[in-house]
Length: 212
Ligand SMILES: [Zn+2]
Image (spheres, helix red, strand yellow):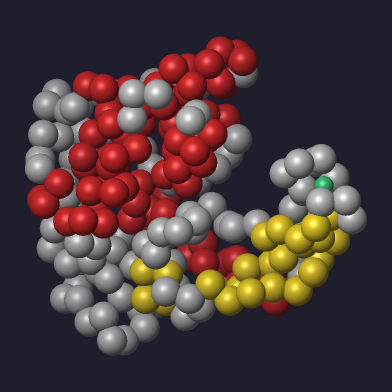
């Protein structure tokens, strides 16, 4: 393992930098949080999601299968069932678990790792997660959020409005990191920690859309 700049959730240890040789044809194993999610889904024990618009609880309304969810080495895992809900006023919506993000094929742990490596070093994009797995273009799209000038003031504003979250300990800045992307990453981590979310990349993705 390379040096880490802050402690990630324990399940993070599941993935190390030394990746198995990619075999993109074969399905890979479920990470622990995906296993737990599948069990809760089967048992009907997932917490009910609320409507984004009115905040009211949604009624369960079937599910769809999310295919092409990828591990660090590029292998896909079995499709993941995503529950759908219905708000009587605002129609159907779905709720993604934090290990998945909208539009991104890779699991959130992979995207988090790429953002950490990018913001915490001076490595060019082509050397981020370079062994196997996501392509240079893919990683380039992920890290673009950290270069978004509009995002930082938006995140700072959110943090100011949630004073309790500001007490979360700051991340230790790496010696050779990229200062501005690192600040954005830290703001995202502070906010998601306050909400007990495991991964910050899905939040930064939504924040970027919201800040426009
Ligand atoms: Zn609603």
